[in-house]
Image (cartoon, rainbow, N blue to C red; front, side):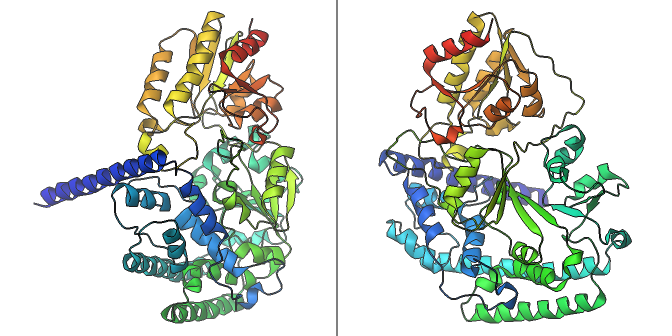
Length: 544
Protein backbone atom coordinates (compact mmCIF):
# COMPACT_ATOMS: atom_id res chain seq x y z
CA UNK A 1 0.00 0.00 0.00
CA UNK A 2 2.82 2.36 0.95
CA UNK A 3 4.63 1.58 -2.31
CA UNK A 4 1.48 2.36 -4.32
CA UNK A 5 1.10 5.75 -2.58
CA UNK A 6 4.79 6.46 -3.15
CA UNK A 7 4.51 5.73 -6.88
CA UNK A 8 1.31 7.77 -7.11
CA UNK A 9 3.05 10.75 -5.46
CA UNK A 10 6.00 10.45 -7.87
CA UNK A 11 3.58 10.39 -10.81
CA UNK A 12 1.73 13.52 -9.59
CA UNK A 13 5.01 15.39 -9.01
CA UNK A 14 6.32 14.44 -12.46
CA UNK A 15 3.06 15.56 -14.10
CA UNK A 16 3.21 18.93 -12.31
CA UNK A 17 6.86 19.33 -13.39
CA UNK A 18 5.96 18.50 -17.00
CA UNK A 19 3.10 20.99 -16.99
CA UNK A 20 5.40 23.70 -15.61
CA UNK A 21 8.03 22.91 -18.22
CA UNK A 22 5.45 23.20 -21.03
CA UNK A 23 4.21 26.53 -19.65
CA UNK A 24 7.79 27.81 -19.41
CA UNK A 25 8.40 26.93 -23.07
CA UNK A 26 5.07 28.49 -24.14
CA UNK A 27 5.86 31.62 -22.14
CA UNK A 28 9.28 31.89 -23.76
CA UNK A 29 7.74 31.62 -27.24
CA UNK A 30 5.20 34.34 -26.37
CA UNK A 31 8.02 36.69 -25.36
CA UNK A 32 10.03 35.75 -28.42
CA UNK A 33 7.19 36.19 -30.89
CA UNK A 34 6.20 39.53 -29.34
CA UNK A 35 9.81 40.74 -29.39
CA UNK A 36 9.64 41.01 -25.59
CA UNK A 37 12.50 38.70 -24.65
CA UNK A 38 14.38 41.68 -23.13
CA UNK A 39 11.48 42.29 -20.76
CA UNK A 40 12.63 39.73 -18.17
CA UNK A 41 16.04 41.37 -17.87
CA UNK A 42 14.36 44.78 -17.72
CA UNK A 43 12.19 43.62 -14.81
CA UNK A 44 15.26 42.35 -12.93
CA UNK A 45 17.06 45.62 -13.59
CA UNK A 46 14.14 47.62 -12.16
CA UNK A 47 13.95 45.36 -9.10
CA UNK A 48 17.71 45.68 -8.58
CA UNK A 49 17.68 49.48 -8.64
CA UNK A 50 14.46 50.21 -6.70
CA UNK A 51 14.73 50.92 -2.97
CA UNK A 52 12.60 48.76 -0.68
CA UNK A 53 12.49 51.26 2.20
CA UNK A 54 14.13 54.55 3.12
CA UNK A 55 14.86 54.30 6.84
CA UNK A 56 18.37 53.56 8.06
CA UNK A 57 19.34 50.63 10.27
CA UNK A 58 18.80 50.76 14.02
CA UNK A 59 21.59 48.25 14.67
CA UNK A 60 24.52 49.90 16.44
CA UNK A 61 27.03 47.37 15.10
CA UNK A 62 26.80 48.96 11.63
CA UNK A 63 27.20 52.57 12.76
CA UNK A 64 30.10 54.59 11.36
CA UNK A 65 30.74 52.12 8.50
CA UNK A 66 31.50 54.23 5.47
CA UNK A 67 29.06 53.70 2.60
CA UNK A 68 27.05 50.99 4.39
CA UNK A 69 23.35 50.78 3.54
CA UNK A 70 21.14 48.33 5.42
CA UNK A 71 18.42 48.71 2.79
CA UNK A 72 20.87 47.78 0.04
CA UNK A 73 22.02 44.72 1.99
CA UNK A 74 18.40 43.60 2.37
CA UNK A 75 17.84 44.20 -1.35
CA UNK A 76 21.01 42.25 -2.25
CA UNK A 77 19.85 39.34 -0.10
CA UNK A 78 16.43 39.17 -1.75
CA UNK A 79 17.93 39.60 -5.22
CA UNK A 80 20.32 36.72 -4.57
CA UNK A 81 17.74 34.30 -3.19
CA UNK A 82 14.65 35.25 -5.19
CA UNK A 83 15.64 37.11 -8.34
CA UNK A 84 19.03 36.31 -9.91
CA UNK A 85 19.10 32.70 -8.84
CA UNK A 86 18.56 30.37 -11.81
CA UNK A 87 16.16 27.43 -11.45
CA UNK A 88 18.43 24.39 -11.40
CA UNK A 89 15.67 21.86 -10.93
CA UNK A 90 12.01 21.40 -11.71
CA UNK A 91 11.18 21.65 -8.00
CA UNK A 92 12.60 25.14 -7.49
CA UNK A 93 10.66 28.02 -9.02
CA UNK A 94 12.79 31.11 -9.59
CA UNK A 95 11.51 34.52 -10.63
CA UNK A 96 12.14 33.92 -14.35
CA UNK A 97 10.38 30.58 -14.25
CA UNK A 98 7.40 32.08 -12.40
CA UNK A 99 7.08 34.86 -15.01
CA UNK A 100 7.25 32.38 -17.90
CA UNK A 101 4.70 30.06 -16.26
CA UNK A 102 2.41 33.08 -15.82
CA UNK A 103 2.62 33.86 -19.55
CA UNK A 104 2.61 30.29 -20.86
CA UNK A 105 -0.20 29.08 -18.63
CA UNK A 106 -2.23 32.28 -19.00
CA UNK A 107 -2.29 32.50 -15.21
CA UNK A 108 -1.86 35.21 -12.63
CA UNK A 109 1.71 35.66 -11.38
CA UNK A 110 2.35 33.95 -8.04
CA UNK A 111 5.75 34.33 -6.37
CA UNK A 112 7.09 35.21 -2.91
CA UNK A 113 8.21 38.83 -3.23
CA UNK A 114 7.46 41.95 -1.11
CA UNK A 115 4.57 44.22 -2.09
CA UNK A 116 6.98 46.89 -3.40
CA UNK A 117 8.20 44.43 -6.02
CA UNK A 118 4.68 43.21 -6.75
CA UNK A 119 3.89 46.77 -7.87
CA UNK A 120 6.86 46.72 -10.25
CA UNK A 121 5.82 43.38 -11.79
CA UNK A 122 2.31 44.75 -12.26
CA UNK A 123 3.69 47.82 -14.05
CA UNK A 124 5.08 45.42 -16.67
CA UNK A 125 1.51 44.30 -17.46
CA UNK A 126 1.63 41.00 -15.57
CA UNK A 127 -1.53 40.00 -13.73
CA UNK A 128 -0.59 39.28 -10.09
CA UNK A 129 -2.34 37.17 -7.49
CA UNK A 130 -1.46 39.51 -4.63
CA UNK A 131 -2.99 37.43 -1.82
CA UNK A 132 -1.11 34.27 -2.75
CA UNK A 133 2.13 36.12 -3.47
CA UNK A 134 1.96 38.01 -0.15
CA UNK A 135 1.16 34.80 1.73
CA UNK A 136 4.15 33.03 0.13
CA UNK A 137 6.33 36.04 1.00
CA UNK A 138 5.32 35.79 4.67
CA UNK A 139 6.11 32.06 4.62
CA UNK A 140 9.52 32.79 3.06
CA UNK A 141 10.32 35.38 5.71
CA UNK A 142 9.22 32.99 8.48
CA UNK A 143 11.47 30.30 6.96
CA UNK A 144 14.53 32.58 7.05
CA UNK A 145 13.64 33.73 10.58
CA UNK A 146 13.33 30.13 11.78
CA UNK A 147 16.62 29.27 10.09
CA UNK A 148 18.21 32.20 11.93
CA UNK A 149 16.94 30.84 15.26
CA UNK A 150 18.41 27.39 14.59
CA UNK A 151 21.63 28.99 13.39
CA UNK A 152 21.96 30.84 16.71
CA UNK A 153 21.85 27.61 18.69
CA UNK A 154 24.20 25.97 16.18
CA UNK A 155 26.79 28.70 16.85
CA UNK A 156 26.29 28.35 20.60
CA UNK A 157 26.80 24.59 20.34
CA UNK A 158 29.92 25.03 18.18
CA UNK A 159 31.39 27.45 20.72
CA UNK A 160 30.84 24.99 23.55
CA UNK A 161 32.34 22.05 21.63
CA UNK A 162 35.05 23.88 19.69
CA UNK A 163 38.22 21.87 19.08
CA UNK A 164 41.13 22.30 21.48
CA UNK A 165 43.64 22.87 18.69
CA UNK A 166 42.12 26.33 18.20
CA UNK A 167 44.12 27.33 21.27
CA UNK A 168 47.31 26.85 19.28
CA UNK A 169 46.15 29.29 16.62
CA UNK A 170 46.62 32.43 18.68
CA UNK A 171 48.67 35.16 16.99
CA UNK A 172 48.86 33.12 13.77
CA UNK A 173 48.53 34.65 10.33
CA UNK A 174 45.35 33.16 8.84
CA UNK A 175 43.18 33.14 5.70
CA UNK A 176 39.53 32.04 5.59
CA UNK A 177 38.36 30.69 2.20
CA UNK A 178 34.60 30.42 1.92
CA UNK A 179 33.33 27.32 0.04
CA UNK A 180 36.84 26.05 -0.77
CA UNK A 181 36.44 23.12 -3.19
CA UNK A 182 38.07 19.71 -2.83
CA UNK A 183 39.71 19.97 -6.25
CA UNK A 184 41.25 23.33 -5.35
CA UNK A 185 42.70 21.81 -2.20
CA UNK A 186 44.02 18.72 -3.99
CA UNK A 187 45.67 20.67 -6.78
CA UNK A 188 47.08 23.69 -4.94
CA UNK A 189 50.63 22.30 -4.65
CA UNK A 190 50.96 21.93 -8.42
CA UNK A 191 48.91 24.94 -9.51
CA UNK A 192 50.38 28.45 -9.31
CA UNK A 193 47.07 29.98 -10.41
CA UNK A 194 45.05 28.30 -7.65
CA UNK A 195 43.21 30.51 -5.12
CA UNK A 196 45.20 28.93 -2.28
CA UNK A 197 48.60 29.58 -3.84
CA UNK A 198 47.58 33.14 -4.77
CA UNK A 199 46.34 33.79 -1.22
CA UNK A 200 49.62 32.48 0.23
CA UNK A 201 51.85 34.27 -2.28
CA UNK A 202 52.68 37.19 0.00
CA UNK A 203 51.71 35.53 3.28
CA UNK A 204 53.91 34.28 6.10
CA UNK A 205 55.31 30.76 5.83
CA UNK A 206 53.14 29.32 8.62
CA UNK A 207 49.88 30.98 7.49
CA UNK A 208 46.80 28.99 8.52
CA UNK A 209 44.11 28.19 5.92
CA UNK A 210 40.62 28.02 7.40
CA UNK A 211 37.72 26.65 5.34
CA UNK A 212 34.11 25.55 5.87
CA UNK A 213 34.02 22.48 3.59
CA UNK A 214 33.82 19.25 5.61
CA UNK A 215 34.53 17.14 2.50
CA UNK A 216 38.14 18.35 2.58
CA UNK A 217 38.70 16.79 6.01
CA UNK A 218 39.15 13.30 4.53
CA UNK A 219 42.15 14.59 2.55
CA UNK A 220 43.80 16.90 5.09
CA UNK A 221 44.28 14.32 7.84
CA UNK A 222 46.16 15.90 10.73
CA UNK A 223 47.34 18.88 8.68
CA UNK A 224 48.16 21.83 10.92
CA UNK A 225 47.95 24.31 8.01
CA UNK A 226 44.43 23.44 6.77
CA UNK A 227 41.67 23.52 9.38
CA UNK A 228 37.91 23.17 9.08
CA UNK A 229 35.85 25.70 10.98
CA UNK A 230 32.10 26.26 10.97
CA UNK A 231 32.83 29.82 12.10
CA UNK A 232 35.39 32.16 10.50
CA UNK A 233 37.54 32.39 13.65
CA UNK A 234 41.03 31.19 14.61
CA UNK A 235 40.55 31.00 18.38
CA UNK A 236 37.72 30.29 20.76
CA UNK A 237 36.11 33.34 22.43
CA UNK A 238 36.08 33.52 26.20
CA UNK A 239 33.06 32.72 28.34
CA UNK A 240 32.16 36.41 28.70
CA UNK A 241 31.97 36.79 24.91
CA UNK A 242 29.85 33.65 24.62
CA UNK A 243 27.32 34.82 27.23
CA UNK A 244 27.17 38.28 25.66
CA UNK A 245 26.58 36.72 22.24
CA UNK A 246 23.82 34.45 23.49
CA UNK A 247 21.92 37.21 25.32
CA UNK A 248 22.21 39.72 22.45
CA UNK A 249 21.12 37.03 19.98
CA UNK A 250 18.02 36.27 22.05
CA UNK A 251 17.20 39.98 21.93
CA UNK A 252 17.62 39.97 18.12
CA UNK A 253 15.36 36.93 17.77
CA UNK A 254 12.59 38.44 19.91
CA UNK A 255 12.83 41.97 18.49
CA UNK A 256 12.89 40.76 14.86
CA UNK A 257 9.76 38.68 15.42
CA UNK A 258 8.05 41.63 17.12
CA UNK A 259 8.87 43.83 14.12
CA UNK A 260 7.55 41.13 11.79
CA UNK A 261 4.17 41.31 13.56
CA UNK A 262 4.20 45.02 12.66
CA UNK A 263 4.94 44.15 8.99
CA UNK A 264 8.62 45.16 9.33
CA UNK A 265 10.13 42.00 7.92
CA UNK A 266 13.70 43.08 7.03
CA UNK A 267 15.31 41.95 10.33
CA UNK A 268 13.50 38.60 10.18
CA UNK A 269 14.64 37.71 6.68
CA UNK A 270 18.22 38.70 7.59
CA UNK A 271 18.17 37.16 11.08
CA UNK A 272 20.88 34.58 10.39
CA UNK A 273 23.08 37.27 8.83
CA UNK A 274 22.49 39.63 11.78
CA UNK A 275 23.30 36.85 14.27
CA UNK A 276 26.64 36.10 12.62
CA UNK A 277 27.47 39.82 12.26
CA UNK A 278 26.64 40.26 15.95
CA UNK A 279 28.98 37.37 16.85
CA UNK A 280 31.85 38.88 14.83
CA UNK A 281 31.16 42.24 16.49
CA UNK A 282 31.48 40.77 20.00
CA UNK A 283 34.68 38.72 19.60
CA UNK A 284 38.08 40.45 19.66
CA UNK A 285 39.83 41.14 16.36
CA UNK A 286 42.68 38.81 17.40
CA UNK A 287 40.22 35.91 16.99
CA UNK A 288 39.75 36.70 13.28
CA UNK A 289 41.82 35.76 10.22
CA UNK A 290 43.37 38.68 8.40
CA UNK A 291 42.00 37.73 4.98
CA UNK A 292 38.57 36.40 3.92
CA UNK A 293 38.06 35.09 0.38
CA UNK A 294 34.74 34.63 -1.46
CA UNK A 295 34.34 33.39 -5.04
CA UNK A 296 32.19 35.47 -7.39
CA UNK A 297 29.44 32.86 -7.85
CA UNK A 298 27.46 34.68 -5.11
CA UNK A 299 28.62 38.18 -5.90
CA UNK A 300 25.28 40.01 -5.57
CA UNK A 301 24.95 39.67 -1.78
CA UNK A 302 27.79 40.76 0.46
CA UNK A 303 27.37 39.09 3.90
CA UNK A 304 26.69 41.58 6.69
CA UNK A 305 29.47 40.19 8.87
CA UNK A 306 32.12 41.11 6.28
CA UNK A 307 31.49 44.80 7.05
CA UNK A 308 32.32 44.08 10.70
CA UNK A 309 35.55 42.19 9.94
CA UNK A 310 36.60 45.09 7.74
CA UNK A 311 35.91 47.48 10.61
CA UNK A 312 38.24 45.28 12.66
CA UNK A 313 41.01 45.76 10.07
CA UNK A 314 40.60 42.39 8.31
CA UNK A 315 40.20 42.21 4.51
CA UNK A 316 37.20 40.56 2.78
CA UNK A 317 37.87 39.90 -0.93
CA UNK A 318 35.63 38.82 -3.81
CA UNK A 319 37.74 36.91 -6.34
CA UNK A 320 36.84 35.94 -9.91
CA UNK A 321 37.54 32.40 -11.14
CA UNK A 322 36.40 33.22 -14.70
CA UNK A 323 35.87 36.14 -17.08
CA UNK A 324 32.76 34.95 -18.94
CA UNK A 325 30.47 37.27 -17.01
CA UNK A 326 28.72 39.27 -19.75
CA UNK A 327 25.83 38.18 -21.95
CA UNK A 328 26.15 37.96 -25.72
CA UNK A 329 24.96 41.11 -27.53
CA UNK A 330 24.33 41.00 -31.30
CA UNK A 331 22.83 44.48 -31.67
CA UNK A 332 25.15 47.44 -31.03
CA UNK A 333 22.21 49.73 -30.29
CA UNK A 334 21.24 47.67 -27.24
CA UNK A 335 23.34 48.00 -24.08
CA UNK A 336 24.11 45.10 -21.80
CA UNK A 337 22.08 45.06 -18.61
CA UNK A 338 24.53 45.18 -15.72
CA UNK A 339 22.07 45.94 -12.91
CA UNK A 340 23.03 42.84 -10.94
CA UNK A 341 26.66 43.98 -10.94
CA UNK A 342 25.87 47.59 -10.03
CA UNK A 343 24.41 46.65 -6.62
CA UNK A 344 27.70 45.06 -5.49
CA UNK A 345 29.26 46.66 -2.40
CA UNK A 346 32.45 44.67 -1.98
CA UNK A 347 35.47 46.74 -0.96
CA UNK A 348 38.13 44.45 -2.44
CA UNK A 349 38.27 42.48 -5.70
CA UNK A 350 40.85 40.14 -7.20
CA UNK A 351 40.54 40.10 -10.99
CA UNK A 352 42.35 38.52 -13.94
CA UNK A 353 43.44 41.46 -16.07
CA UNK A 354 43.09 45.15 -16.91
CA UNK A 355 39.87 44.54 -18.89
CA UNK A 356 38.17 42.89 -15.92
CA UNK A 357 39.53 45.68 -13.71
CA UNK A 358 37.79 48.24 -15.96
CA UNK A 359 34.60 46.13 -16.05
CA UNK A 360 34.30 46.19 -12.24
CA UNK A 361 35.38 49.82 -11.92
CA UNK A 362 32.70 51.03 -14.35
CA UNK A 363 29.87 49.03 -12.81
CA UNK A 364 30.12 49.71 -9.11
CA UNK A 365 30.12 53.12 -7.45
CA UNK A 366 30.94 51.65 -4.03
CA UNK A 367 34.44 52.42 -2.74
CA UNK A 368 36.67 49.55 -3.81
CA UNK A 369 40.21 48.32 -4.17
CA UNK A 370 40.75 46.17 -7.26
CA UNK A 371 43.88 44.01 -7.55
CA UNK A 372 44.99 42.29 -10.76
CA UNK A 373 46.25 38.83 -9.74
CA UNK A 374 46.22 37.13 -13.13
CA UNK A 375 43.96 34.11 -13.81
CA UNK A 376 42.53 32.35 -10.74
CA UNK A 377 41.78 28.85 -11.97
CA UNK A 378 40.01 25.83 -10.54
CA UNK A 379 41.95 22.65 -9.90
CA UNK A 380 42.34 19.39 -11.76
CA UNK A 381 40.38 16.43 -10.40
CA UNK A 382 42.32 13.89 -12.48
CA UNK A 383 45.66 14.80 -10.93
CA UNK A 384 47.62 11.84 -12.25
CA UNK A 385 46.14 11.91 -15.75
CA UNK A 386 48.86 12.44 -18.35
CA UNK A 387 47.82 14.23 -21.54
CA UNK A 388 49.65 13.92 -24.83
CA UNK A 389 48.34 15.95 -27.74
CA UNK A 390 49.19 15.40 -31.41
CA UNK A 391 51.82 17.82 -32.77
CA UNK A 392 49.62 19.12 -35.57
CA UNK A 393 46.44 19.94 -33.65
CA UNK A 394 44.17 22.73 -32.46
CA UNK A 395 42.46 22.70 -29.06
CA UNK A 396 38.80 23.74 -29.04
CA UNK A 397 36.71 24.94 -26.09
CA UNK A 398 32.98 25.51 -26.53
CA UNK A 399 29.97 26.38 -24.38
CA UNK A 400 27.71 23.36 -24.01
CA UNK A 401 24.14 24.21 -25.09
CA UNK A 402 21.52 23.04 -22.62
CA UNK A 403 18.14 21.43 -23.23
CA UNK A 404 15.56 23.93 -24.50
CA UNK A 405 13.74 24.06 -21.16
CA UNK A 406 16.93 24.81 -19.19
CA UNK A 407 18.19 27.38 -21.69
CA UNK A 408 14.88 29.22 -21.89
CA UNK A 409 14.98 29.78 -18.11
CA UNK A 410 17.97 32.05 -18.69
CA UNK A 411 15.95 34.33 -20.99
CA UNK A 412 19.09 35.55 -22.70
CA UNK A 413 18.48 38.65 -24.87
CA UNK A 414 19.85 36.74 -27.89
CA UNK A 415 19.81 33.04 -28.69
CA UNK A 416 23.49 32.27 -29.06
CA UNK A 417 24.32 29.38 -26.73
CA UNK A 418 22.04 27.04 -28.68
CA UNK A 419 22.84 23.73 -30.45
CA UNK A 420 22.56 25.08 -34.01
CA UNK A 421 25.26 27.71 -33.38
CA UNK A 422 27.49 25.53 -31.19
CA UNK A 423 27.31 22.67 -33.68
CA UNK A 424 28.14 25.07 -36.51
CA UNK A 425 31.13 26.26 -34.45
CA UNK A 426 32.35 22.67 -34.12
CA UNK A 427 31.53 21.67 -37.73
CA UNK A 428 33.38 24.63 -39.23
CA UNK A 429 36.51 23.95 -37.20
CA UNK A 430 36.48 20.20 -37.75
CA UNK A 431 35.96 20.44 -41.53
CA UNK A 432 38.95 22.76 -41.97
CA UNK A 433 41.16 20.86 -39.50
CA UNK A 434 40.35 17.58 -41.24
CA UNK A 435 41.15 19.04 -44.68
CA UNK A 436 44.59 19.96 -43.35
CA UNK A 437 45.09 16.41 -42.01
CA UNK A 438 45.39 17.75 -38.49
CA UNK A 439 43.59 16.83 -35.26
CA UNK A 440 40.82 18.70 -33.46
CA UNK A 441 41.30 18.37 -29.68
CA UNK A 442 37.99 19.03 -27.94
CA UNK A 443 37.42 19.69 -24.23
CA UNK A 444 33.98 20.29 -22.77
CA UNK A 445 33.65 22.68 -19.84
CA UNK A 446 32.10 20.10 -17.53
CA UNK A 447 30.13 16.88 -17.68
CA UNK A 448 26.50 18.00 -17.46
CA UNK A 449 25.05 14.72 -18.76
CA UNK A 450 21.55 14.88 -20.19
CA UNK A 451 21.22 18.57 -19.31
CA UNK A 452 23.22 19.14 -22.50
CA UNK A 453 21.02 19.40 -25.59
CA UNK A 454 20.56 16.06 -27.36
CA UNK A 455 21.56 17.53 -30.75
CA UNK A 456 24.85 18.66 -29.25
CA UNK A 457 25.47 15.29 -27.58
CA UNK A 458 24.85 13.53 -30.90
CA UNK A 459 27.32 15.86 -32.61
CA UNK A 460 30.08 15.06 -30.08
CA UNK A 461 29.27 11.35 -30.42
CA UNK A 462 29.53 11.66 -34.20
CA UNK A 463 32.93 13.37 -33.99
CA UNK A 464 34.22 10.85 -31.45
CA UNK A 465 34.12 8.17 -34.16
CA UNK A 466 36.56 10.15 -36.31
CA UNK A 467 40.33 9.60 -36.18
CA UNK A 468 40.92 13.35 -36.52
CA UNK A 469 39.03 14.10 -33.31
CA UNK A 470 40.30 13.79 -29.72
CA UNK A 471 37.97 14.17 -26.74
CA UNK A 472 39.64 15.30 -23.48
CA UNK A 473 38.07 14.40 -20.12
CA UNK A 474 36.08 17.38 -18.80
CA UNK A 475 37.54 16.85 -15.30
CA UNK A 476 41.02 17.74 -16.55
CA UNK A 477 41.83 21.40 -15.92
CA UNK A 478 41.63 23.74 -18.91
CA UNK A 479 44.91 25.21 -17.67
CA UNK A 480 46.72 21.86 -18.11
CA UNK A 481 45.27 21.41 -21.61
CA UNK A 482 46.15 24.95 -22.72
CA UNK A 483 49.68 24.53 -21.39
CA UNK A 484 50.46 21.75 -23.89
CA UNK A 485 48.29 22.98 -26.80
CA UNK A 486 49.68 24.27 -30.09
CA UNK A 487 46.89 26.81 -30.59
CA UNK A 488 43.46 27.40 -29.08
CA UNK A 489 40.02 28.36 -30.43
CA UNK A 490 37.30 29.29 -27.94
CA UNK A 491 33.58 29.97 -28.15
CA UNK A 492 32.77 33.59 -27.24
CA UNK A 493 33.42 34.60 -24.45
CA UNK A 494 34.88 31.69 -22.47
CA UNK A 495 37.83 32.25 -20.12
CA UNK A 496 39.92 29.58 -21.88
CA UNK A 497 41.09 32.11 -24.49
CA UNK A 498 42.70 34.16 -21.71
CA UNK A 499 44.24 31.05 -20.13
CA UNK A 500 45.83 30.16 -23.50
CA UNK A 501 47.13 33.73 -23.75
CA UNK A 502 48.70 33.31 -20.30
CA UNK A 503 50.74 30.39 -21.66
CA UNK A 504 51.73 32.27 -24.80
CA UNK A 505 49.60 30.15 -27.14
CA UNK A 506 47.98 31.55 -30.31
CA UNK A 507 44.36 32.02 -29.26
CA UNK A 508 41.19 33.44 -30.76
CA UNK A 509 37.40 33.56 -30.37
CA UNK A 510 35.46 32.11 -33.30
CA UNK A 511 31.98 33.48 -34.02
CA UNK A 512 30.33 31.23 -36.66
CA UNK A 513 27.41 33.67 -37.10
CA UNK A 514 29.50 36.76 -37.89
CA UNK A 515 27.09 38.84 -35.79
CA UNK A 516 29.28 39.62 -32.76
CA UNK A 517 31.04 42.98 -32.85
CA UNK A 518 34.76 42.35 -33.37
CA UNK A 519 35.51 45.13 -30.90
CA UNK A 520 33.16 43.87 -28.18
CA UNK A 521 34.80 44.72 -24.80
CA UNK A 522 33.60 41.35 -23.42
CA UNK A 523 36.39 39.72 -25.48
CA UNK A 524 38.91 41.26 -23.05
CA UNK A 525 41.45 41.95 -25.79
CA UNK A 526 41.22 38.54 -27.51
CA UNK A 527 40.71 38.73 -31.30
CA UNK A 528 37.36 37.63 -32.73
CA UNK A 529 37.23 35.92 -36.12
CA UNK A 530 33.97 35.48 -38.02
CA UNK A 531 32.92 32.96 -40.65
CA UNK A 532 34.72 30.06 -42.33
CA UNK A 533 37.02 32.18 -44.52
CA UNK A 534 38.61 33.98 -41.55
CA UNK A 535 38.74 30.70 -39.63
CA UNK A 536 40.52 28.94 -42.49
CA UNK A 537 43.01 31.79 -42.79
CA UNK A 538 43.78 31.70 -39.06
CA UNK A 539 44.16 27.92 -38.94
CA UNK A 540 46.44 27.99 -42.00
CA UNK A 541 48.86 30.14 -40.00
CA UNK A 542 48.97 27.80 -37.02
CA UNK A 543 48.63 24.30 -38.52
CA UNK A 544 51.16 22.62 -40.75
